[in-house]
Length: 164
Image 1 (cartoon, rainbow, N blue to C red):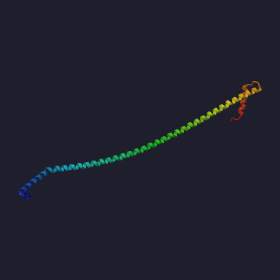
Image 2: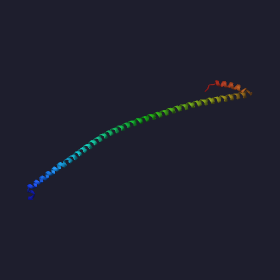
Image 3: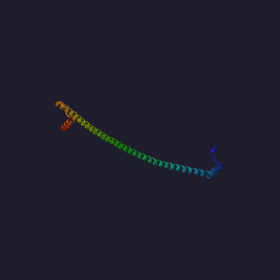
Image 4: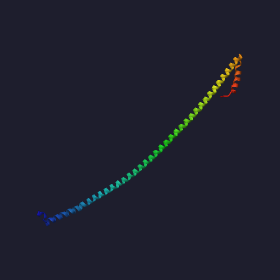
């Protein structure tokens, strides 16, 4: 153990000389590349951070744009749905109006047809009554009368009757 603690001035001189030579060589040829590499690494990290921040800002802008577009699309969709509802209500209303018009026309046509049938039936009944009266009169008088003349007479009396 004693030899480890013994200091030899010659060995110390050579150790210091070797240390300074290695330090000089490392300083001359090694410091610049190391500093350059560290600077490059630092610049690369700064560029990566800047790019990440730029990408983050772009992503935030795209997010805002897409949210706005989505909101606009929802507003547009609501407007289209409302417009569709209004159009559907309009179509239903028009169909109901047209159905009401058709119903009224059919009722009016039916009333007119009933009136025509009523008038036709009244005319038919008048003709039959006139014919029966003429026949009854012929039988009573036991002679043949002029049918046209008597028909006109009977018709004039029937026309004087109330129309109910």
